[in-house]
Length: 208
Figure 1: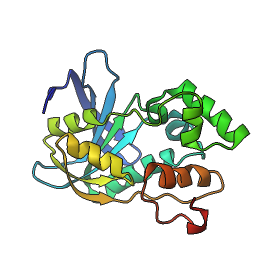
Figure 2: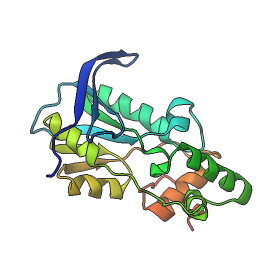
Figure 3: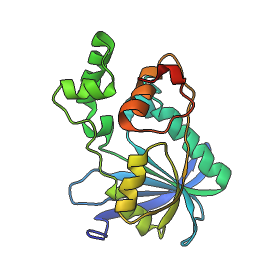
Figure 4: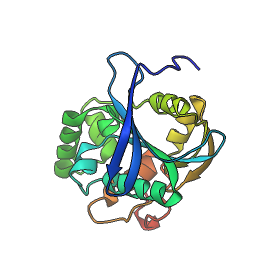
């Protein structure tokens, strides 16, 4: 695969309330965003390692916004790695709002609240792309860690296809389903109906 080498890497132990992780901070291109891989336990080359590739969502991950399920997925994924006693979470920065950035994402929220647009139409109404994320950095750091086959914590077929295209074998897609609430139902419905996410727990009468 092209551009296999990471541009810059730093590693340390990181003690969290869930236990010990190895923190691998990295860039995969000069001047690119700094990403982070959290390694729990001792995932071994040749194993189908439990992995979550998580896109940055400041409002959800840090401030626990209920509009999306991002923060809940991050927490659940970390719990799953600890329960497994082995695994990796790759946190990709620069993915805010599926790549449009924080300011643009907040502007889409206004359209969603005031005009009832969903997460897709609110982006296109502003002349913005729906999704410009690149998961190549995740594939490169996984190979840096010696991991080439994963059990991917995700509901997204597109994420599976992207990692496959970057040379990572997906042994299994492990669902990462969060409770449906009055705050996230529109967002989750759009992810299912407009973005192809596999969300079987959504009420079928809300389809379309």
